[in-house]
Image 1 (cartoon, rainbow, N blue to C red):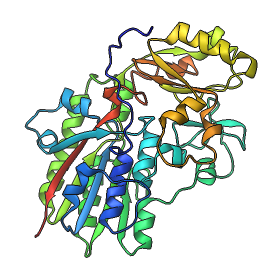
Image 2: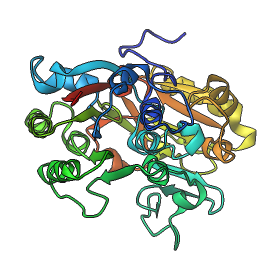
Image 3: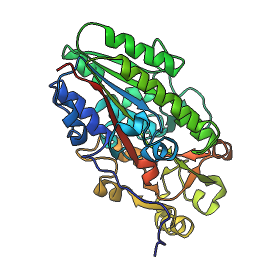
Image 4: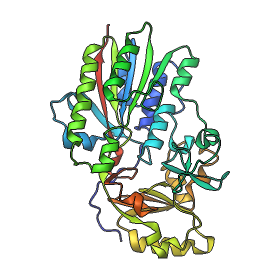
Length: 375
């Protein structure tokens, strides 16, 4: 029997997720969304605004805000409620859901590394490199080729709405959050109604390196809060929505190659995420693998077969994309403690804090809303 868990576990709710927020944006601009909208956001989108701005701060989950930010500060003062990431609660899956309105089972950008049967390799999705070796995966972008989707900005632009993305990874590549806010301000000043989606890669990057209570984390969050507050004060007839893709949890790790009783069962290295590893298991060893996995990790992970994953609709509701089965493998482990399973010791030693699992710290995200309507 599983012992009582020290962490609160929250399963995804695909009527109350970041994908649903994206669908609320589409509905606001009179475009049919692919999934249901987010009721928490819909009531704030009932008025007409010149500008709607969504600012996504990577990793700033509800628990991180509670831990570091004052209750009377701008973010917590304008917190309208908490809702959930998708599963896995990680940047690749959640930001793709925010960009598309699709659930992970629909868009299949499941995590940092995904298995692509066309190459028979695990590919680091954003970097377009081969897992572990880091060599170029192909002469084309693998995930965009095999898992294409139409984003919100593209759908809005096709419908005649001015829509923009602002990110350190999108031209003109702002190199500071101050620069990013200045770009948002400049776009908002232009004539006409518009939607602006802005992504910033902190505090996620710092917390991975230093942990959720590491030196400089609180100060960084206060800087981000101050920047958004100043931006909001400078804008008229603009709705600003601040949210996150996921939270964070200080983690400990093990290396799969240092678990020989499990490693010998595998066909290939795990992918998706260290807190959501998938396992492609030799057919004759599937029962043995399940038994051995629970002997070692019964208090740290839920182990689910492919069929169990699909029955629980863990990655989303609606019809699964055709390649979803191939990406899941035979089993996935869903973290319910602070443990992560890494493929290499080198990678394990780089991460003080993680995400992607089912704990409240990772799954719960804030919906912060500020701004003024001219009406």
